[in-house]
Length: 235
Image 1 (cartoon, rainbow, N blue to C red):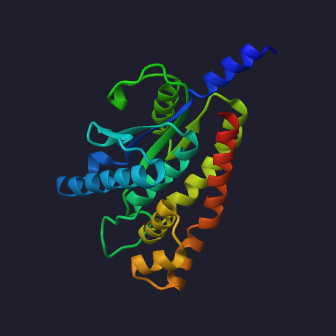
Image 2: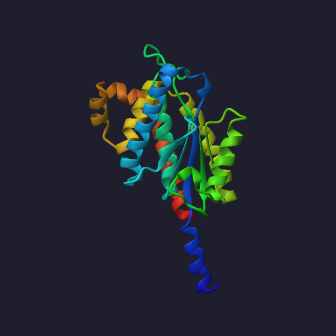
Image 3: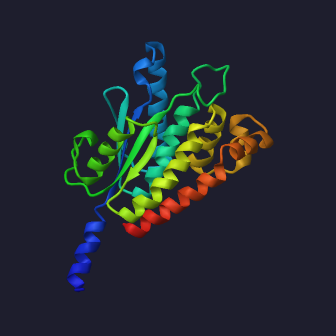
């Protein structure tokens, strides 16, 4: 294999990005009085994720049609963490403050697409390329099934491994109560110590530990690390 080919191949791989496309679950049933609160929570998560995780001066997220959103991440290895944080933020808000059920929270369907970008507009939703097509097509397919977290990449071996892992992660997140989601969000957003998070949430260290344990925090941390390793080895 020539040195020139290797150089070109490396250059192409560097153009791979991550695209997150999502929409709010059951958005048509949201009452007007709750819609503003929901959008405020969503925008808040975007700001915090952009500041602490993506660390880009310009916001990576755009909202369109009122209930859908999209983001471009230059570092594909961060797409899973960002997606989990968005869902955690939404699920941390109970529709009824007196209930703490996994069925009484807001949520979103999120599809991650990894690939090249052919055209980047000043508006994310007007950009185009492989990553956008994979993300959009995946989200369309999710609407026909009860899936809320999926990924599509150009690599079949990666798709085969992550299909199973994403299914397990999705099942775990679907069972989070608003209290578990709140704990997960605070722990992963800035990677704080548990003692600092428990102080911020105004709960005991034991209570926080229980929320994290029942929410399978350590399992998801392992998955996030594995995902990061896969992405960085491919790109």
